[in-house]
Amino acid sequence: MKLPARQVAGFLRAPEPDTRAVLIYGSDRGLVRERVTTLAASITDDPSDPFRVSELTPEEVRADPARLGDEVAAQSMTGGRRLVFLRLDNSDISKPLALVLEDYPGDSLLIVEAGELSSRSAVRKLFEADREAVAIACYADDERAIDGLISDVLGAAGITAAPDARNYLLKQLGSDRMVSRRELEKLVLYAGEKQTVSLEDVVQIVGDNGALSLEEIAFAAADGNGDQLERQLARAFREGLSPIAVLRAALRHYQRLHMAAGFMAGGKSSDQAMKQLRPPVLFLFADRFRRQLQSWKPRRSRSAMALLGEAERDCKSTGIPDRAVCHRALMRLSMAAHSK
Image (tube, rainbow, N blue to C red):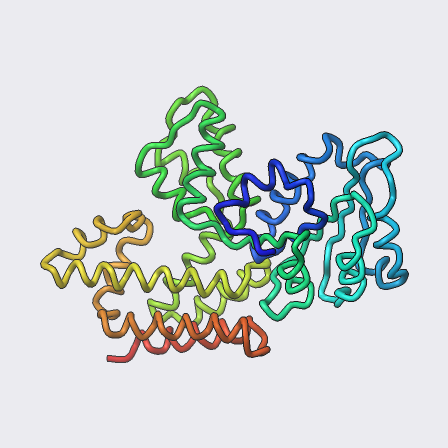
């Protein structure tokens, strides 16, 4: 079955005893890894225990399809439930998985880890249709999830973030859970004995990570800076950022432009409108955002949002390479920024 987002955290800490297999997949590979680790820890304290944990590769399963069933059926020599890990690549091993799920041969928990899987994926369909299997999607954290992560990591060290520092973190983090956690842990080390970190602390320490790349891509498109957009897109794809994550970041940017334009239509100045956004526009980007408000009036920003939504649908449904879809959509917006 497909597990609702609100149930994921509880399930990972204490999976249902009758759950035989779990697929954890998505574009946020850091979140995928974190959730795999959390789920594994609910079964065993030592994921390297060879008597209770087995890892398989797609190559091993393709070479010997019966191997997957054998590993799942194996008994632990030291007691306790066994774990079987399988990390998927781009190859199709849905048939061996289907055979195992159809007649599950043992009590082991099978954890399958994967990257982005479309709704047409045979493996994803298998897990979503099976009553004893669970599929968990992992996409870029939204603002609420990032806020919770900030509270968890900083709170564990007895540190709080000043309001403007927290707003900055909310904008910077989120492209990848593992990157976000690592950046926050660096901030904790930097803070030392401080009980509160300032905006200056955060700007000094939080790295030029994927989230900043996403921000620069969105701003470059809305600026109409095609050269910068090309460079930032190439860099983002080299770093492994998902085209869908890029499109969603751009969509959020145009939504904020549209909202700010609405505030201005209600009598607010551009500065007042920007401060009314939640979170407010970062000072690093304030001048560019203010200029963009002059170009992207409500009607044009609505068209931009529609184009980005269509591009995401194309990534998921047409079979056209998703990087090409993303590139084409953003370049169209970049060119549109110069039109009157």
